[in-house]
Image (cartoon, rainbow, N blue to C red; front, side, top):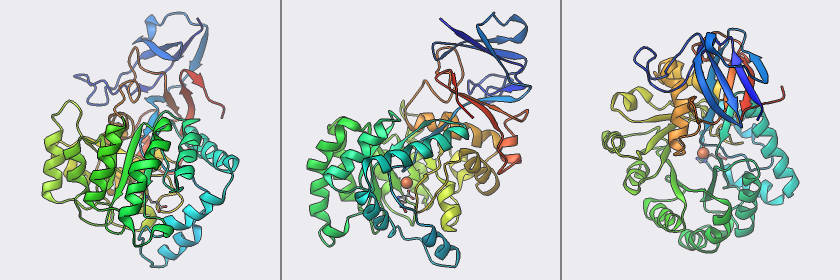
Length: 395
Ligand code: NIG
Ligand code: FE
């Protein structure tokens, strides 16, 4: 069995809390051994075992790969003109989703596949080694199923988002569309999906619709997630906690009761994570969610890109980390944790987002001595190398 030693590490972020290393479990003067795609040993560099191959980290920081737990990569076309209009003062309403639905339905499988792979590769070059991918721009039985089939070619973290908006052909008949989502669409999607999601927001789906869809999705064996409280206050976050969702995403407009509900779930075996998506606030010029309020209440916070052609066309987790630190009152350590271990919690994964023996050898090596530089040097390509399942990725 071939082994790979990573040494000359400036700082290792393990996310295994230690007395001296804080929540990031920082370690120095250590080396890390990989075999068969897993971390098998971490210990003092001077005791590093012999290995078949070696990567010299050159004194750079080594971190778990980013876990991007919220992305919409299966789409065609872009909406650059909509972005420009927003920057000139137009509000974001989510109405542009239907533009992308039209383009996606008209695209070939290969066109969609190329976009998914291009964005996945782009994310990987920026340190992302686990990526959730949603459907939601097909909104017919066949187009949702093919979106998920294509997503499943590159990730195990696939999410059925047939309830993204009510498509034009169902205008004025939301109950009929929810019936389709809960029936034939769910049946066609389930073989390719791990999760089910609903955009629970004024103008999309209300709490009754969301509850109906999530309940049948759960009965079909899917885990639950929600788009909630993005554009205004609403019932989504509390519904997600009540139903035991793995994550409620956006969380931009929260009442005290929403924060209390999330904090109340924090002690549970499987808490509901609050996943914050600062790329969406950046690209819609909206107020950022208050991460500090959530963290101070004891809520588990994740950061993700929300990569999509409308509200957040970025695949960059380092960008989200920098935004979270600068705009959302997170410390660099909290933001790095949220983008790695937090994302893993949001996907209920224990094998990623950490570096310890037995974990997946998914990691990044920085051209910088510490994790602090991810926020301290915004916009700079600091990711020197990425290992995915122990395999160095082409640069
Ligand atoms: O998470 N909010 C709903 N869905 C996406 C936006 C999709 C779009 O605008 O195309 C989001 O921001
Ligand atoms: Fe989203």
